[in-house]
Length: 282
Image 1 (cartoon, helix red, strand yellow):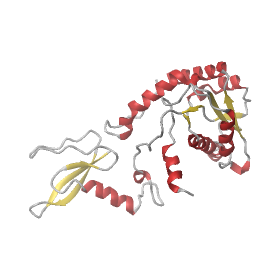
Image 2: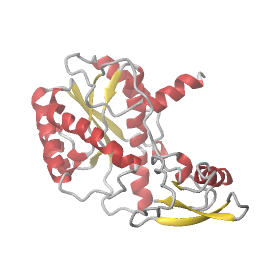
Image 3: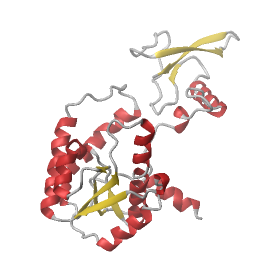
Image 4: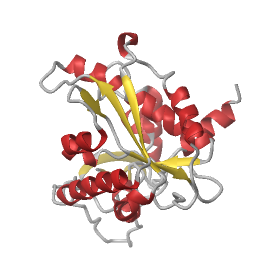
């Protein structure tokens, strides 16, 4: 197995919005091939209760897109997580919002929409049953996106239309005992390639044996990130994807963001005594 190719596929398969080519038809046979690959994904107790609705009729695509837009209007009024301005996710938000708006305005123009479903309902069911049901369809959806990506076809994973799942079910003739899992606009993508997305490093949320107990390597890397700019007196951040802090002028007091956690670090000063340094953790 060519790991370089596999890793490239896994790290460069994106939710595609602006780069979907609405003018180019997508052969149904290619989508059927992608679905055939997708159903090799895990399925709880080998039930294989999945189904995939391929929507190509213009009137039905328009109705689903209208439900999606209706859901977006509600979602836009919901409170969003508040994060520091220098948080990686905060900096990425404007670009993601712009591409999402484009999809909202143009979804029905996609050559097809794909609705993956799973047999069963679980409102009020125990947690293990909910995990089993979703775990029997979501891996297949991701496998579909990977198979499509390998064939030059992009898709975008969306779920907001599920605010109006019953209305969507009526459009597509989906019975009450079947759960919709997502809505994917599908089209060939423009351009040559995609790049891996910038993410918060996995070491920031990878733990050993106990949640909150980071591995020795992660702790060492964090300590190195905290100390790497402390060869003299200074003030810096932990390595969490945030840009490095500005240097202070001699004699000035460090500015501390509200809600920051300050940690004292003893670093040998030029006079041989520990110098008082602080690392800001968000």
